[in-house]
Length: 238
Image (cartoon, rainbow, N blue to C red; front, side, top):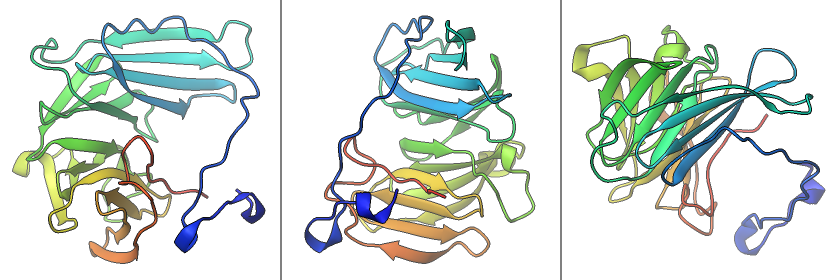
């Protein structure tokens, strides 16, 4: 956004502004039976193709391929039931698509402490976290030589954890970085250069360099509310 469009409050806190919806479309094939917890929209193959992923509180995943120029936006869709058949109590669930292989998707489920990896509707592997996961991302780039399509960045409790689902040592976990003392991390994002940013209950954003796993920068008090709650999130912009 241009600088003149930004509205700042006390201590330079950013104030949300109103946005206008130019056009909208309805996706017909999205038959969730419980609350939708996360929605992700990614670019598909071709200029007019988008991929929409939704997951509900029991881990039921629905992926729709959308045609943005056709009169009927729905192109195709498929549904993936949870790996454990959705038993137990519903909770927060999140998903993300691989930036290099759009058929690869990761589904995180909070109370199950699990991350399920799928290739379309085929289950590849389950990862088990130590804490309740709160955010999951495929890095756009990973500078340590690993293919980024198999790397996941996850916030769980007070930690940022890095996973390679091709590895079996330590359950696939390759790195853990502790966050704020006594705090909880709620959100993670990555940049095209490989940097990883996290935010949580301390209302601060910390940027890590995965080559040394040291904090490059820390933006304290950047949000009025806890980062990652419905009022806010963290993301890199070009």
